[in-house]
Image 1 (cartoon, rainbow over the protein chains, first blue to last red):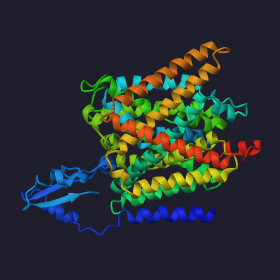
Image 2 (spheres, each protein chain N blue to C red; image 1 turned 45 degrees about the vertical axis):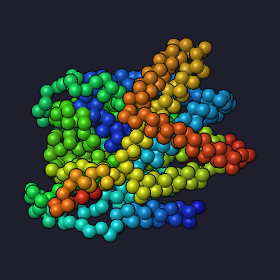
Image 3 (spheres, rainbow over the protein chains, first blue to last red; image 1 turned 180 degrees about the horizontal axis):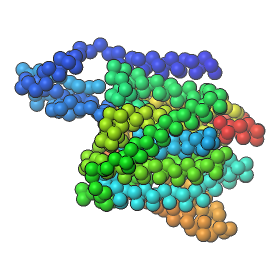
Image 4 (cartoon, each protein chain N blue to C red; image 1 turned 30 degrees about the vertical axis):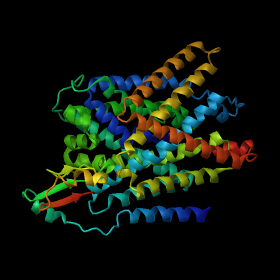
Amino acid sequence: MRFFVTVLFLILFGSGVSAFAADIETVDKDELKSMLGTADLVVLDVRAGRDWSSSEFKIKGAVREEPGDVEAWAGNYEKGKTIVLYCA
Amino acid sequence: MHSLLIALSITGFWFLSPEALVLIGNGGGAGSGAGMVVLLFFAAVIFIGFSCQGADADSKYLDGKPIRQSKIILLNQLLGATAMIGTTVFASTGLLVSAGFTFNEVFYYRFPNFAFAFIVLICALALHFFSKMTRNSILACAVFCSLSGLTGLIAYGLVSSAPIPFQQVNENSSILGLLPLLLVFTGIDQARIIARREAGYFIVAFLFLVVVLAGWMIISAGFVEADRLLHSTIPYMTAAGKIAGNTGRLVMGMVIISGSLLAVYGLLSICSSFFIRTTKYTQGGNVHRIVIVLLAAAVGIMMATGVAGSSSLELYIRSSLLLWLIHMAFSVLSGAFSVRVEKPLQAAAGILSSIVIFSCSLTLFFFQKEVPAAALFVASMIAVTAVLMGIVKFITTGHGSDESTRRKITEV
């Protein structure tokens, strides 16, 4: 029983750690802050479900898009623009 | 005092959760006056239902009386198990994410929200492995943090002058906007069974929590514009910020985190107890713990696979909660029928109560945005639960008929 519980505790903790350890290129918040307001910048809020609804903070001017439906909205933005996707 | 805190932690496991606070906040946005009336009406309906709920087969089992199994009761047990498994897995996922975001955004933004959500899940799971005394003390602490924070904010709001005048009904809302307040009472049937040792305190705890929630609804509506409150996904934080600024947010953060811990602990505990009772497996506390560990693992998998970020999560949670209320309505109805000869008045009140719960739940179900998807989800969940119950029953047939172990498991 103890072994069973210990293994499950480790799985739970391990899956928690892996959930936020993805190797994705990011923009520093201060860097983004300095870019806000420029005409070249488009901030896309691609948080969905609880990730969006539980959060108190929303970036001013950010456009909400469905993360699972990229093809539907990708064409709406000019390629020359700096597009920042905000997902967490 | 300690017994009252324990009764409050059992009774308030859902009342003090972020889910209930969202319902209360949105209800206040639909009109604080009407919202309070509807909340008190539902509280009265549930209170009347208490007089009959528990007279069904499940509680006869608990009371050690002979079990009268009929197909309808079995069906209701299947409905209950489905609702509880659905709520435990999906609502816990949502609650934990809310706790994670609250910690990240209110207390320490460098700490990842998902990591905190997993920590709360592990804490809720670990509580089941502590001694009864330690567990009760931690739960009492959590409910004290939650209630003192909420009542503190209400008191602070009362002494400050509310900028928004009392509004009876929001013009942009409808009666349907107030019906979800019934969901605040989800799980109170099972909480009552678990809190039977503190039966006297249970009613006090129930009434106290209803008053606190009604107070929070009025205060929220006094500080936040009705439309904003109605459509907010985190009305509790908006209201807390408006009432007491950043201090209010910090206090609400504490309320949300302790409320989430209580809710997840309560859901795991209730779901496991119900599942074991209905499958009549009585070999002792270890099975109870294994079921809890499996449920917690399911929640962990939901979070790790990104279900929290899925737009379907709300649909799963809402459908599971409504199924639970329908199960409650059937339990009250079956109880009312069983006492109709000796207590006709009590039976009539019970039947009325179950009709109200049933019709409101059904209305809410059919006024959801995606009814076919909700129906498909419910059907799939019932099928999965039926298979699970069948497997457990098959494995456990012929074991654990000893009355003392039966008693032991109902005390977990």
